[in-house]
Figure (cartoon, rainbow over the protein chains, first blue to last red):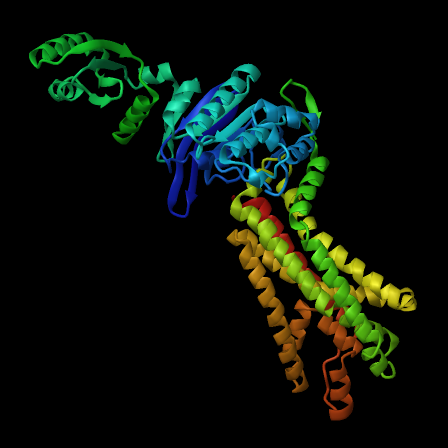
Length: 308
Length: 291
C-alpha cells in the first residue's frame, strides 16, 4: 500500500512553476531518497504532502486522504523540516513532554526518544534556543518520532551539519527504518550520504520526477554501468580513451578513471584499455565493472530528461 | 474521531488535548515573564489613577449635577478605560506581531501544523493566547477597581457597565482584526503592530475632527467613526462629555445625539465589522494560507 500517492502535481508561485506535473509514490515500509539540486521542487513537494501548500493541479493523497483537510493523518506522520523551528524559550524535555500530550502518548516517551536519538543528557533541560545545530536536528528527529509515526518525512535533515553529525543522523534514520519498519522519505542534495541508506530513489529536477526506483532498477532503466580503471596516469588515459567512439562518458575521480559504455561494448573496452595503456606507457593496476554511484545515476537521469 | 495507530488498532484522536497543549505553548510564549506582569502593573496603575481622578476631584464631582446616573457611570468607565485600553491594544498587537506574525515569518507555524489539529483550532488557540487572555485580564482589573471604588454603582447599573465595556472593546477588536489579517496576508508581524498603533492615533484624530465638524453642522464623519468605534455613539447618547454640555448650553449648537436604540445599532454594526474581519481571517487561514 502507498503511504503517499501524488499524480500530476503542479504548484506555481506566480508565473514560476516550482513543481510541474510531478508524480510520485512512496510505498509503505520503504526508505525512499528524494534527490535533486537546489530549486528542483523537493521542499515544495514535501510541503504539499504535509498540507502546508495547496496544489494548483493534481492529486495528492497521504494514507489515502487529502493532507490539507485531514489533520488526523498527522498522527501517522512525523516531520523533520530543513530548518527546524520550535518555540525557542521552552526547555527541550519539557517541550517534548508537551508534544507527547498533544499526540496522546505517555510523557515518559519524551526522555526515551531523546536518548534514542543520542541527544546528550545535559541538553535535556536546556532551552531550545541554546542547542547547537546538530543537537537541534537530533531534537527535531526526536520530535518527529515521539508518537511512533508510520511515515517520517525528512527534508534535508543533515543540512548545516558537520560530517560527523551527518553520519550520526543518517545512521539513526537507517536504524529506525530497519528496527521499527518506519517508512522514510528523505530529501537531500548530498548524494553520497543518501546512497548509503536508501533502498530506492526518486530523482527530481525542474519540478518533475525524472526517474524512480531501486538502484538496480535505475541502473537498468538508465542503461548505466560504470567501469573503473585504476592507473598511475589518469589524465593521459582519459585523453587517449576519449577518442573511442563507443565511450559515452569518461571522467577522473578519486577512485581513478570512470568510464560509461554500453553493456555490449564492455569486452571491447577491456581490450582497448590494455592496448592503449601499452601504447602510451600508462600503467594499469586494475579494471572493474561496478553498479553506478548515485551521482552517476543522477547525472544520467538529468541529462536524459534534458534531452527528452 | 479515531485514527489507526501503527499496531493496526484505532486510537482516539487527542483533539482537545492537542488544542489545550498548543494553547499552553502559545501562552508561555506570548505571556513570557515579564510582559504580562508589566502590563498588569500598567493596567492597575492607570485604572486606579483614572478612577481616582473620576471619583475624587474629577468629572463625577464636576458633572454629577447635570448628568443622569447612567451617564455618570458611562463617563466614569470612559475615563477608566482611556489609557488602559491603549496599553491593552499595545499588548494585543505586540502578541499578534511577535507571536502569530513571528510564527509565520520564522516557521514555527509549520511545527504547529504538524500536530493533529485543524487550522481553525490552531488559530483559535493562538488568538485565545494573544487576545482573549489579555482582554480578560484588562476587564478583570477594571471591574475589580470599579467595584472597590463604588460597589453600589456596579450592582445598580450593571447593564450600563456591560454596554460601556462592550462598546469600548469594539475598536480595539477591530484594530486587532486588521492587524491579524495583515500579519496573515503579509506573513510579517511587524506590519500588524505598526498598523495597530497608527490606527489608534488616526482614530483619535478622526474623532476630534468629527466632533468639530459636527459642531459646525456635519454629522456624516461622526456617524462613520461611530460604526468603527461605537463608544462615540454611546458617548453622544449619554451626552457625557463636558464639550457637549458646553456646546449645547452655552453656544446652542445642535450636536448629533442618537437614541438608545440607534446607539445599540452602532454597537451592533461595529461588532458586525469585527466579526466580518475575524471571519475573513479564519477563512483565509483555513482555506488559503500557504506556509
